Image (tube, rainbow, N blue to C red; front, top):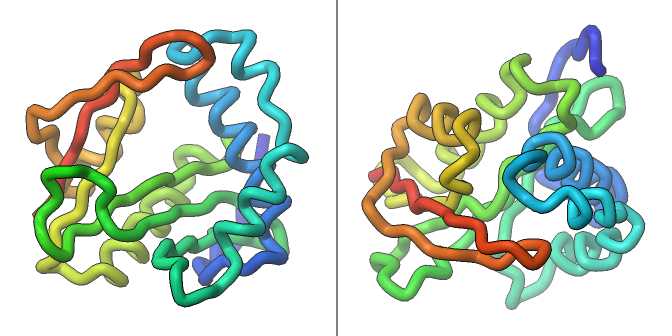
Length: 174
């Protein structure tokens, strides 16, 4: 648990952040999805196995249109957000999708996620439509997105996670 965060900086992620992002990603899933995703799946998550994938995602290149930002304080990565072109079949031209916003659980409630989403929304522009997917049972996340101008658009999907079907709800803004 983080007692005092200090001044938070939001900056573009680099490949040097891959291990820290992988760790935050796993810890956030294990805490945030407890009771939503099967426990055995959450226990099996391993940050080390995700470093290579995050390194690839963060490597600049002409085909990499995903942008990732990290929130850090005192040299420690507290969270991250990734976005890029919408992957939905019915996406409108130019629509963006927030793929992920995850924080180290000890930083929840300190405004770090707010700073990350504000940065992403500023980068995509006020007029750009943005969508994201959130587990239907994740009340905390759904409330957070509603506070930032997103609302469910009526589209749902089932994703298989850890051998169980997880209902996700699409939220839109703009």
